[in-house]
Image 1 (cartoon, helix red, strand yellow):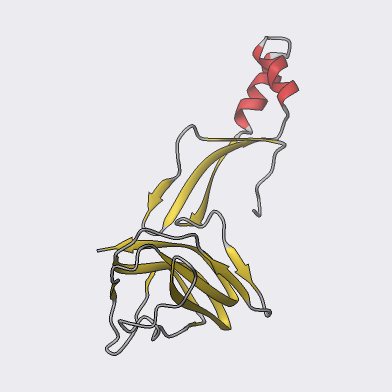
Image 2 (cartoon, rainbow, N blue to C red; image 1 turned 180 degrees about the horizontal axis):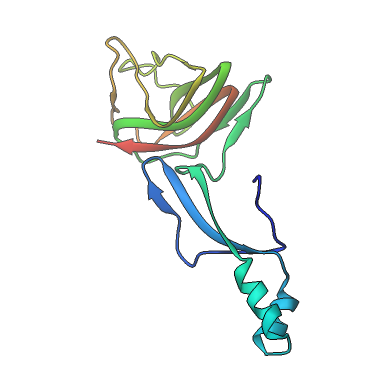
Length: 175
């Protein structure tokens, strides 16, 4: 990031701090390397060198949106992701997604053999259109639209995502 400098950076010895929908990381950056620090630590550097090394250390705060460590990305060319079978009986489905202007994410619910489930209005899931940037966007479907998905006793289900100009970071299940 702008203003960040130093060949040796160290993260805080703690997990990220969740603040709203962001994760905060604290780290320190020193404008010196390990060798200089080692000399100062064992007393081979003079007092002025040791003082300079301590005084020029900076502490930074970096942030990232919640749960956005890795994503499935698609640009102008459509991409597709088919999940492994999930033992999920239904509820609210939330998507951590970022969709650019003119992009979309389409979700299809399938059985464990990757055949679309056409009952219970699950074939009526409208595509999410951009621009959209949400960490827990509830998926709606069918007339209404409905928010709580209920599955018959078909066994595990799969999700097939088709993305264009979008990034899918993950999904979550609610009650």
